[in-house]
Length: 562
Image (cartoon, rainbow, N blue to C red):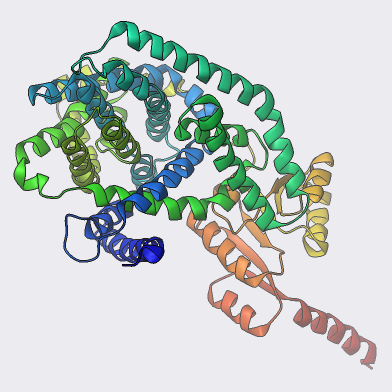
């Protein structure tokens, strides 16, 4: 393959194979990540056929890491964490410590260095955000009290791994030339310098960026240009990540995370997340493909016992630790089982940690292969782990003495704070588009004191509506996540007053996914569009010309009647 086309070839083959294997994975009820990793293995150097350029794949993976970390920061919810801080913070820290200790002991028993053991243990301690959220969504427990604890736990894990990515280079420097042993003096010195740079970066980011970034985004949103807004979001993510690395010697990952956190302060954060999501998804796929390219599948044959040990550490070791920790905090067995099942896999942070460990010389390449093998198998097994929750809970409840012992703290859930994301508005209408049509509808609802939420892409109009005391959200309702901000799951009626029929179809699909029983009324312009929406079961389809003709016809008949 000519070098000039290596990038195109890698991206093309990566996307084609990732799409194919991702689809096959979903058909057998596995997360698409499994398919993306398999696609990477297929284009990697350890399998026959097309071999992608590893150097280019590495750079694409770096962009993937930046956008993944940006997404973590953008969706970081301090309120969610604070609501379950009593269990999530100490529980996650204790579980990370246990898993890291297990990984370190395993690594040192194989003759690896202490640094390799720490990296391996950290990689085994953190669960995949994508897999966990998908599993909770499938069980309809994402917004349940069990799910909130699991998500809060995961937030703490993510924050811990962000810090690990920052401190690993300092630890690697302290171990160089010391035979793999930690030079405490050098380590403390390196950590001190690193902490100083981070503190300076965070201080400048919070003092200046907290105001500048939302202000800049609002100025650009006022132009009304969607592509310029999307470009601004990506410029902020990549610009802060690169600038932090150049100016403060901070990792791309930390810079991108803080870019997301700063952007989350803006009321436009949901639209920023929606607009950047397609590119995040695309580069995330390339990231997983590039990780798969590095995996040597022969490790499954060469060292099956090591693979089994890693898998047991993930599925049994850290999950059992999480289960016991939740019970020690006097929560019900169902909560403990949900949290432990949620954590019985590893994913994207594990890959990032393993890749950094190898690049710093802390972790041998075999360690990366073991982490990848553990991820592939644990993600594959995770649905089956979740399936054991109900029978295990029944088994415990069938034994009164055991049930009484483990359910001592069943009242703890009653004291759990209400979901901070909840909104007292229920049974309301969601109006998509507040132009001439939507505005008249809103005025009529307001006159009857009926609750409604407006979603509108004109920021100036949104600001005017808010000044009037009307709940208004800036964003594109056809983008994922924007309807959620309007609490579509608790709404009674969806009013699509926007004239864009293609967007209306997408909005309708998203609304029904979140709220299958929601009533709908849609505006359209042609008979073909009206026929489509009527077949889709829309409550009322209003075509402007038809309603105009009916109104004029009614008047004409009344005027001419004898």
